[in-house]
Image (tube, rainbow, N blue to C red; front, side, top):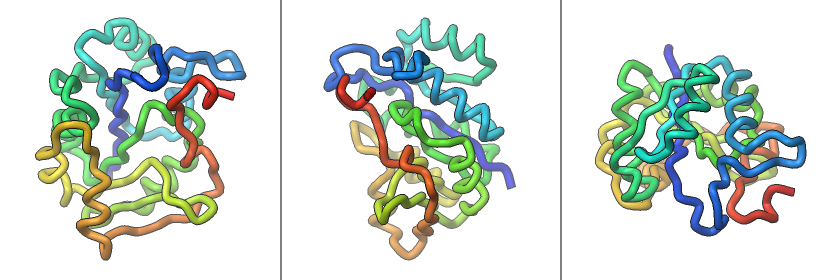
Length: 186
């Protein structure tokens, strides 16, 4: 079964104050580079959704060998980007939705979720009893994801189909850690 990764990286980072994808982490890497390193380690096929004006990010993705799509609907918010991006996952049986502001999730965690999700499930990693990311969606949910819009992501599908949610315990605090403000980089 083919499972791929769809990265949502078209956000405007209003709370952060600047482009958090390019923010420096304590180890000297930019946030987006740390994320790409983990995706490389996962070995999963990946497409990164960016905004139409993100030419610098597009050039970085080209240099790193990552497929990308400039999503015209990114101005709507996460739901618009996700709705446009899910069309790129049509050849995959399942997709992992990855948020670009979560550079600390390990490549092995992506593999763990990918190995558990199937066409009919929603697979969610948990750490310390809390649900995190990436969330895997079987192909069954693609049409509903394509109907999303605005700034609402696919979290509502977990609520709509609670019996189809499979929680997978992982030993990765990175599944809960994102970057919203500059102090989150520390």
